[in-house]
Amino acid sequence: MAAAKSCPKCDGRMEEGFGVDRGYGENHVAGWHPGKPDTRWWGLKANRKSVLAISKFRCNKCGYLESYAN
Figure: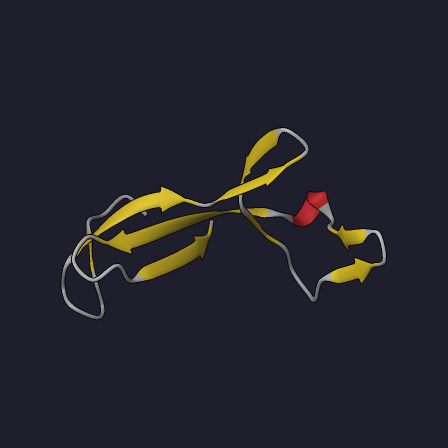
């Protein structure tokens, strides 16, 4: 997503960024996982093999967010 984007809501400029997952003293780029979450009594189970990094775009005018799993 290298091309400059304009906001679909207000035509402002979209700036690229990312979301952060935090846990156990580590930070990771937020990821997209296919299917429904598998939650157990000990927490969420995620398949690391199929995860895609999520890039986000934020409008500098209205704050609208778009997310893409690249």
